[in-house]
Image (tube, rainbow, N blue to C red):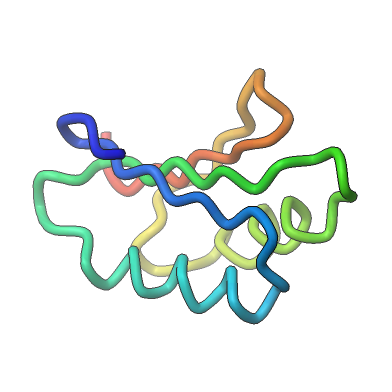
Length: 81
């Protein structure tokens, strides 16, 4: 689902390699109009994906910051203000 400026990416059921590949691809495809990527990773089956996303993308060159959500099953990658 894409709202104006926000891209949603669902990585439920993926392993960390698949999720990282999908997120990297979304970051490469993100044009100038995209300011945020909402990654839906879930949390009921563990925190491996959440932890990987929150640590691996803190220092990514396209990611301004990683925002935690009130929804435990998603993480926001902010690309610009």
